[in-house]
Image (cartoon, rainbow, N blue to C red; front, side, top):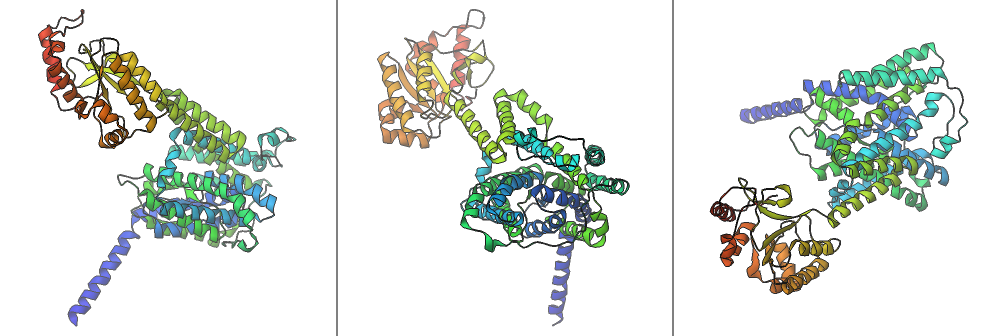
Length: 584
C-alpha cells in the first residue's frame, strides 16, 4: 500500500514537473507577454481591415491560439490575425456579401470554414506540396502588391473622409479634399514610432506603444475612436446562406487556403531553429484553426512572422507560451475597456500602414535583380497584377508567368560538350575552360534538362551540331533524365538513325532504370544496344579508348600548351579510371 502511494505521489510530481516545463517557464512567460502586447493592436486593426469591428477582432483572435496549441507542432508559431490574408478576405468576400445580401460577418465566417475544409481535404490527399507553386519572385511581388493595396485601403481613415478604394479607377475619380490633419498626424506618428522601435529592437511592442501615444493625442484632438469594447465571439447565421453564396466564395476560399498555408510554411521554415517543420502537421493544424474560426464567426487566419519572431526573441520553449498570450489578450479588454475604447481609428490605420511597409523588402528585390532579370520581371508583373486586377487574379497571373518562364528554361536549356581539364577531376564543359582536352573522334555531350516534348527537337539539333562528320562516337550524358515521354523516345530513335548515316555510333551514359525501362518498352534500348549503355561517363570513355586505341595515341595538346603528348594520354586515361566525378 505504501509503495502504491509513493508511486502515485512520484507520478503526480512527474506530471507536475512536465506541466511546469511545458508551460511555466520564464521564456514562455516573456514570449507570451511580448506577443500578447503585440497582438492586441494587430487584432483590432486587422479586423477592421477584414471588414469587421475592432472589438469582434479581439474576441476572434482567441480561437486560433487555443486550436493551434492543441493541433500544432511548432513551438514558436503564432497563428491568428494577419494583414495579408485579412485584406484578401476583405477584397474577395466583401463584394460577394454585398451582391448577395449576406452579412459580411457571416460571409467571412463561411469563407474561413470553407478554407478549413479545403485544407483538411488537401491534408487527406497529402497535397502539402501545392504551396510550392508560390515561388520566391511571386511571394516578393505578391507581398509588395498587397502592401500597396493595404496602404490604399487605409486612405479614408487617414484622410478623414470617404475615398473610393475599391479600384484604381475609383481612386482616380475620387473627389479629393483637404484632409483632417489630426488623423493624418496620428496615423503617421503611429506608423513612424512602430517602425523606429522595430529598427531599434524587434522585442519592443512598437504598435502597442505607438497606440498609447495615439490615445494621448486623441485626448487633445477630436478624432473618431474605436468606442466601447465588449469581448465577445460572434456566431454567424449560416442558415441564411444559399448554395449560390457557397459557389461564389469557393474560388476566394481556395486562394486564401493556398496563401495562408504558404504563409505558415514560410514562417515555420524561417523560424525552425534547427528542427525542420512537418508540412502535413502544419496543414492539419491550419485546417483546424480556419474551421474553428469560421464556425465561431471569425475571418480567415494565418501565420504572423512578426509575432513568431517575438516568440523566438522572448525565448519560448513550447507552443504553450500562447497561454500567456491569451491572458494578455483577455485581460486588456476586461481590465482596461476604457483605454481600448479611446484608441483612435487613425491609430489603427497607422498600425496597418506599419504592417504594409514591413511587407516590402527592398533587399529581396535587389537580390532578384542581381540574380536573374526574368525573375525580377515576374515579381514586378505580380505586383502590378495584384494592384490592377486584385489579389487572386494577380497571383494566378504570376503563377502562370512563373510556370511559363520555367517551361521556357526547360525547352531551351544549357548544353555542353565535355572534356578533360588538367589538374581537375572529372569532365567539364569545354566552353568554360580554354585548356580543356577532347579525345579525337569522341564527343561527350550533356543536355542540362530532362528530355520531353518541348525540348526534343532542340536536343536533336544541338547533338547533331556538336557531332561533325568524322565523329566516331557520341556519348550522351543522361544524368538529367529521370523519365522520357514518347516524343523524346522517338527523337532518340531519329537521332540514332541520323548519326548512323554519317558513320557515328550513339552511346549513352548514366542511364537510370526509370529511363531504361521505357526505352526497353519503346524499342530504343534494342536499337542503340544496351552494351553501349554505361553506368558512368568514365567507364564509357574507357571503353572508347579500348575500342579505338589510335584515339589515345593521337592525343596532342593545344599549340599554346607545352605538356608532352604522352603526359596528356596519361591524364585522360587516369581520369577515365576515376569513379564518377563528371560534374560540370
